[in-house]
Image 1: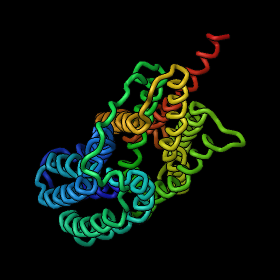
Image 2 (image 1 turned 45 degrees about the vertical axis):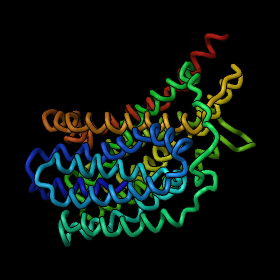
Image 3 (image 1 turned 60 degrees about the vertical axis):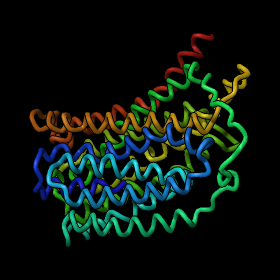
Image 4 (image 1 turned 135 degrees about the horizontal axis):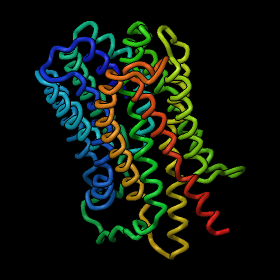
Length: 383
């Protein structure tokens, strides 16, 4: 949630071996690896190893801290990718096993509060000392948090009746793949502003580092509210909307934000970037809250066919799809940035090196709502 601060620092103070453009994949790789591991972790720690969740989370905290320490000794760009991008995310994923909902609800709060702290530490001490300070903060807060979260009695028993097998019949449903593709597409664009917005604001619009850091905070704050908002659209008893409608609202609104606000920024135009950060952070940040409606729809289909379905495993697979999107978006971002440096796409933000990234963000976001088009065609076919 705060990697953009490191990205801007690495870009402005590059001292390592290897191309600095590669740093653009670190943040998206970290998110991608974490979400990709979710299906496996949900399968292991929901049933068979439920009684080992706390141990797994403690191991995750230790792995994360070790990765930050190793990252502080990096001399080549691939060291950063391996430690910050892969090792740290695997550790964080293990921490998620204790209480996924609690951790998920806190991520936007942390993402809103930490950018200025990290910026101050980076400016004063550089990235090596900052990572070591962050390690100390992480090990203290994570271990305390793990023990503060109560463990359900059912997960403390080491022996239990033979666990029933996970039903996989939902994989035969086309609906699952429609939403999975939508999640992959939306996530591939969602990680781009998280990585490059800070650098864009400082290099292109020539904003101060403080203003650029503020944008990242404004990007994360709306997610605290938007998750509840989009969940309410699906679950309220007065005018509940279908999963396809809610995902389309999130997708189209975030795409318009990218095209109209980020794409039309010019030098010194902080107002548009502030609007973009708030609107994109709200509509794109709440996309994952629409998954409750997606799972309900799949449960309804399974009930109609008299099939069993494991909602927890299904949710884990949707997280896996998000991980694929994060990784693919990060890998696409590096050549898109290079392409923007070679050719111009017009004026404003589109005419900068970040133009292809802006267009990619908008297009991938809007295709995150393509389930509505599929459902509309399905209804036409029935008529």
